[in-house]
Image (cartoon, rainbow, N blue to C red):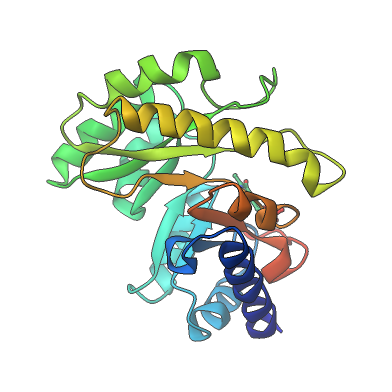
Length: 231
Ligand SMILES: *Cc1c(COP(=O)(O)O)cnc(C)c1O
């Protein structure tokens, strides 16, 4: 079941890429496994899926300890500074940096671990009051500050646009994030000599996101089905 769904999604990503003149290899599928048990992750891994996203640290820690060390993990949840150390120990990338304080905490712990941590800056592209993410007008300044931290590499931008009824309604938000990333790239704000990452698109709208330039699509429900509670 999970294998078949993964195949369909990979095919849809590849087709959307080709149709918009992009190389399908430039898009990675992040399988969002929050609130799904390790056996489902294992099943996806056996079908060639190596990149997974998690939202909750405690839950992620339990699962990561039980699964193959060849799996790569991205943190995509809301992060508090006092949990930064755990995050650095578990994840290859933190996609949800939206304030300097959290970046500094991650940087300090990455230094302790003697490593460099890849991060994305999360942008609140729809200016929604309740949502995480730096305001678009403040993103450039934040990236400049975070870029000074020696143990972080700012690899690009991430966003979660407002929830909409149809995927087409996400398109203007994806376009806006792409425009920002092009501007910031021209200003040399991202880690040099590495491809700039744009994490956008979920189960309902990842095809539109690929058409608009996503390099990471975060897909949960379309792979694993409805979420259950795993703690
Ligand atoms: C849960 C989650 C997803 C996946 O959402 P689906 O609609 O299940 O594909 C993607 N991104 C973030 C940040 C999430 O929290």
